[in-house]
Length: 327
Ligand code: WQD
Image 1 (cartoon, rainbow, N blue to C red):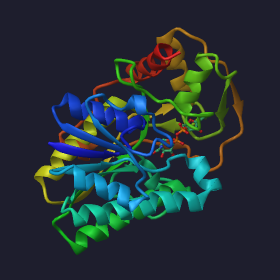
Image 2: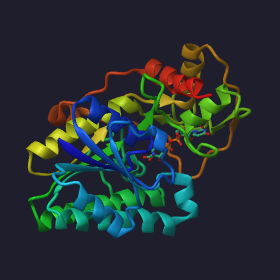
Image 3: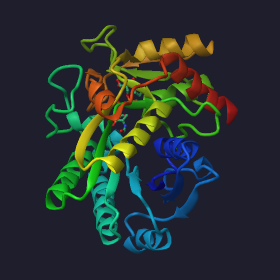
């Protein structure tokens, strides 16, 4: 198959491109390299530098690249804290680019899409584990709201034209890296997310980790999340691609392990399996955080025939392996 990957130079996008090529697909990558890295793009992928907000740039890719079977859409801003400070930038970028993409896809009669959504669409869940039929009307930040809005846009698009085939993938917390160490999570500045921060502390690029609160109603008081290996996540995209190419309709799927780990449990696992210290201090809670979040992943298993294969040891070792290899 010939697959166009928007945002394929990013953390999850680059891992999915590797998996697509390893699975024998022809891949075209379109990325503005604002947060992605050109060296993360698989050498066998065809690369176009461009911005999804610029209609002529994405339109010309469809003109040049005939026979695109499906699109995977990763392109968008994704930092929760930044979205609270710059909501207009997030709404303009994430919504606008998706509207442009759908219009151009429609004009070129390409109507198979896998969309990168997020567990943040659930906001504060009413219970755990989280199921796809839970309420998705209020996120706790503008980033999550953009994902809710885009899911709604894609649902309305399908209602208007049921020849579209759409998979909405709700990621939990992706961490880890490709076993080769060639690609991984490589934030340009101080990391917002937990694992890249831990890695920089272990690598002595940052002094110590601040643990945002230990007074939550959890096993040890620190936040619990469903960490999923980024390669398992990439494999989920291949399964979702197969689903959109062989089924008619639109549907949402949780991509998580179903297991929750607290901040301190993840820190201790990282220290144990990498045999390295990670100094930390307990500080106050971070605005917008919820206590616990983990998936019921049974729908993706039943319908997509997908389930996770990597455990927390793989995740913490692969995360550090990538940084060690790229010192
Ligand atoms: C995890 C836990 C923090 C940093 C976000 C997005 C989500 C997805 C993944 C895109 C929490 C704690 C963190 C730190 C800490 N991204 N923490 N010290 O907020 O669960 O999810 O990233 O789709 O959409 O919302 O991930 O890694 O920021 O936080 O104690 O320096 O680690 O409080 O409990 P989060 P995170």
